[in-house]
Picture (cartoon, one colour):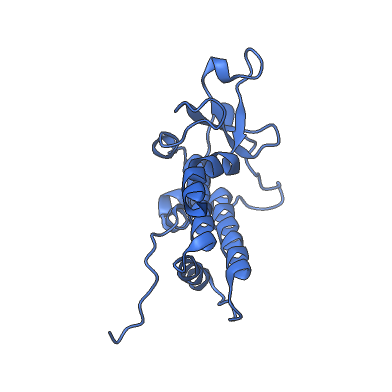
Length: 187
């Protein structure tokens, strides 16, 4: 064992998307319908953006969240710099178990869900999640009134008012998804 062992973890979906030439091309994540938001546009005095800023923002959010996770769970060791170094360090911290592992799993799943919604490929992930209110597998990607990515329940009985679907934040849905594991480890 001459090589130091790296933490076993799969690459986050945001990083995979950021490394794929198709998704980093400007305009590749443009969506219509309830997910549509005005795209960032260059002013007339500058050229268009050659890089997909949505994908770049997803990778930056993941970097920031992993760095915060590492700061919270670090043990008096200097946190490394650089995208892959911080991601590896966070995965090693999560291997210690307990609350760090649960928080890391939730963080990774949340960012995978955000990235899948950004590229319009969230059906597989949303199919594994139940609505926190009615416990049905009926979630679809949408936008919250604030513009943030969210999920809505398609069940009519779950709606707070007729014609208005119940909308949940991604974080609330992920916490609900991992709640049985947290309860089992706490007991």
